Image (cartoon, rainbow, N blue to C red; front, side, top):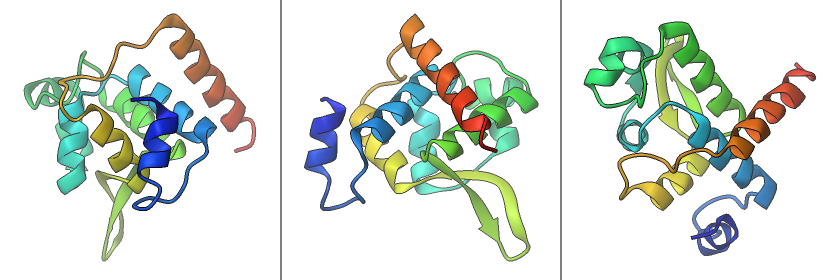
Length: 139
């Protein structure tokens, strides 16, 4: 299912996202080292950073390859910037847990039946890298 079809199909349930925003988010998901299982869990509950990173992430089937805590957090923060994730907040402020945004739910529905996201092409990786550079110029 194409991103355009996805946007048209779900525009009653979700805020309408431009095609460019959805494509950037899809590419970011394909380039991230995370599994669909992680996002399915994030759809129902907050998932703590320590449960995602390192050996714990592999044990929980949240990672496709081992990454340390800092790299994992940076990848999750990028997914926040593209609009897929949000940080959970409790009574004392921001926590170390992450959840899906409405756009994250929309994209998860597209791949829920698979164990992992489609493998990123070299072009996807370049596009994702370039998007991160462009956004960071304005921070």
